[in-house]
Image 1 (cartoon, protein in one colour):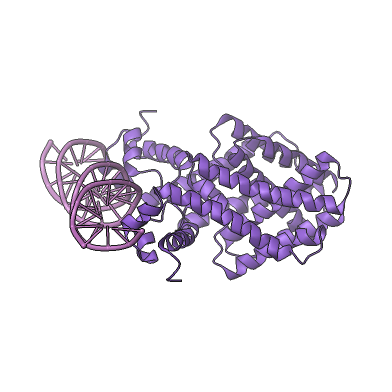
Image 2 (image 1 turned 180 degrees about the vertical axis):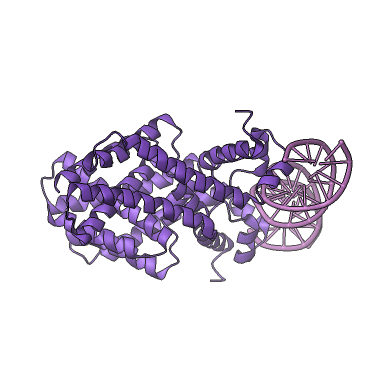
Length: 189
Length: 189
DNA sequence: GTCTATACCGGGATAGAC
DNA sequence: GTCTATCCCGGTATAGAC
């Protein structure tokens, strides 16, 4: 962990803190202290705190995507992979210190501005929607366009809503419930 | 607007800013400037910034509830009042500067602490759930307990999820879609 | 490239006059 | 109760030595 370059340590530390504490609530000073580097070194690699945020979002988005894909890799396309989406997050909620969806949190923290961050947040949900729609078309083909988008929206909102409730209640139960509901919805297809 | 007491002006100004800009991003200085009062006066009425936050949340929760109730008052209990919930927010998203659910935003902004704020957030969703469950029982009675909670969760998550998507996309379309989906779900009962 | 030291600003909160 | 003036702290960012 010590020998992986200053830039990498900064990004890792910042990522952890941004997610756990929030972006605004995390100061540069805390980042450099925990990363064990000097302040000027940080600004050598990242021109500003916002640049660090963008790097965090991009990296997290891609790595979460890979983790998801790896998690559902051995599952059968269609219903099983879709259920795997919920199970992946269920596991995530139990092991890590779950603090809600990283992208939603950032979106709500930065009301005013930052087009870069917003782009990453949108890209995140786009990837989720694509994944869901893709699996739905495996289950039922052809899938009428309108029905498909409706079912996709429903599954996505169910997923995101349950993540929020779980965070507020500090419980994995809402996601458990969402998983069950999603299963019921899929069996009606 | 000028003659309604300092405390009231402070709370109104803070409420607007907390919602539009976020709690952390809003400073005491901006509040007192826009409210047109001195700093010490603020601390005469509210012992700290956090106390101001709690007052904001409590007040908003109650007033939003009343607005909702007033909006659906003339609608028939059951399906119509439930659809009114979505329509209320749709209207809300189009007129005001919609910045997502005020309570969700606060919850995500304050990762670490503040039990008071969390209490208000939970109370908000509790009120929504109660409202939804109540109307569902009008539509179908008796309503099996398990089915009822599932349907309630689904409608709630659909509602909250659509609010989030609408905020991210800066569009009322997700909420429109959610309304249609909810309608379909209700017709299956 | 990495450090120490510092600049500059705005944060929340208080003292004391009126 | 409301004001002005101030305190202290921590924020982001930068200068300059090594």
